[in-house]
Length: 472
Image (tube, rainbow, N blue to C red; front, top):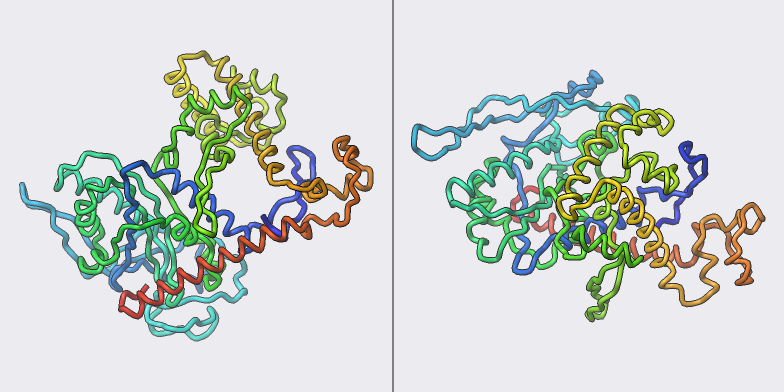
């Protein structure tokens, strides 16, 4: 919930919509909460969450040159000071060789918000920020996030588990990148979802799969998390000390395994179809209150679960139920109307591929035809929308609170739109600005409080790591 909402015009549906800003602490924390819920939905009974922090030694930090920034290059080259290579001799095990020469990691396309706009940077040796147009420090290397490092780490981890430990089980992960709050050093945080009996195997395999730090420090940065979901999800939130230039081009993004967050039985396709037939797409979830008590409440199934089985394409809202069913029976027709929907060739290709894959999975589970798939597709999304709306009204305890449930209450009061349901309530609307609704303000304050609490905890942990010499 956000108190900085503003109106935008959606030219595809020819309507004005009120949307949140997406940048304030409340919006950032709401995104983190959704990520945390998805992380919790991924753990199975008997599993643990192994919390891993991957850091760099100075010689392996990815960096760019300030000279390239000064020239305004739109493709910045990313380097590493020392190059490494895995090698082996005949039947011997793989060994790691280090070459003391620069390695070109790749070119990154960048966008400059404004070439004459000042932005902060941290060199690898500087302790204080400097403005871009000031005199350069002798060391002109600026550390950046290079996300392929963590992708290669996951690949190397799977190979090491198979070759050295004969480990054939599947495991899932959630990973995010972060720049340290003090020196802007890049590092990664991961959660590995593994069986409890495999903890020692993974501790050793993880330490051997990350070649950019010492074995001792890697072992120290592996621990079993009690509930690291909210803690790790908050890392993706944008830090105030990060320059917009580096945030845009070398963002602190996150990634996860294929099919992540689909462990509960309520998220299976058969369960989704059964719940949609009954007209209620909710599932039971444990909720821990501030006093420590645990309640079981019914909440709507997350949207990412519905999208997993029924792809919501661009222009979806412009179709009537009958026309949507007809389109899904003949998906190729989408290419003829794509220009009117604002879709390009890549969106058309994505629509056809994802729809075909989802129909094949639907058919393998249910054995039904494409007509049944189209009917269930329309019904599931319709029931989901009704479920979300009903859930929003479940917390309304006083009929006078209904006036704070509509962003367009000003248009209703002026007579631009009609709502017979509200007419029968006979409400006197004291506030017409949605950003000042009491319920919205209270929820926003709760999100901001949670954001600051997690941010403070994160900074305290990082400061402690710096004090111990971990240089994060």
